[in-house]
Length: 405
Image (tube, rainbow, N blue to C red):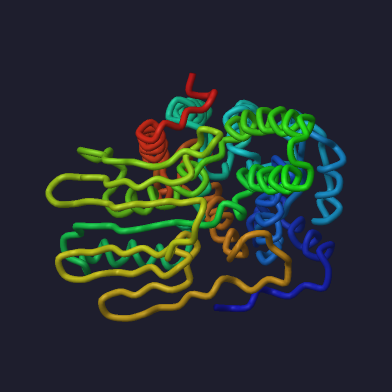
């Protein structure tokens, strides 16, 4: 892989990016606005730093607290920091918005941006349920604006090779997808605080047994936290299940299976901590999926056909290694000197490049100014099917959110 271009300072890059106001020798840089100043937003902006600023530049960030936006802007050398999403939506210098907030906020923030004329890349899951997903996609279509669910897996070279192999018929008739995703509970942010509280209360009760005030505090804090955890959209289906589901959808297409068998376990908050499911597409085609937030799984994917097998090595959701019937291929993630919160996050640059391509080129679902309103690698139809499958799995195990009412 070619090394990224080296520039002495970010300011020089910005100067270069501004030299083509008429889109002459170079396309003008895609100007990003960032909605939310959390960990995944940090990783996304850090990943953008490896791309030429003649192509990508972050010009604004917004958070619900101005000081958080300002700290984020200082860290990443971003010119504008806002203490409200409304201000970001009104910024005329923003071409496209990356929505990196917790997913219960996606529909509100993304609706605001689309209504203000801003194309959007929205972190997975796109929304909390099918109802909200339809709302956003309908709005994007009515506004003729680009909208994509940030299933970053789809833009890895490994996934492109998988698509090529499937298109070429290397596996023959694909009959089965086996994929699992398990990570310990303490590594999932929305569940981590519950784990810490559980540990803290065990220590307190051992240290001062029988003290009613400790028990009362425990009950009060637990009640507040467990309620807010569900409001934060925690759970294995929405946090990590989207990754196993998207692979089934990629292989078998954006259709609802003929039959779905699913079971799982709920934690004390009434949120799914594990799910196992079989998606039966008929004609012997099945996807066998499992997720868990309390233990580590192999985290690999196997696609089996009548002529051969493909294996995507761990971590299958952000992979660098794939085995086809004829060879084993390695695709290292782009090098980056930045510090990331999540594994292989420099590869978030892949999805950013796809967004820019869609905004600047038109050859599929074209709308005004030759722009695409969706990516062929992660289409609206696929997001709708993912949302419906997520709803069905949650219903099977008993997870229900306030947004479902």
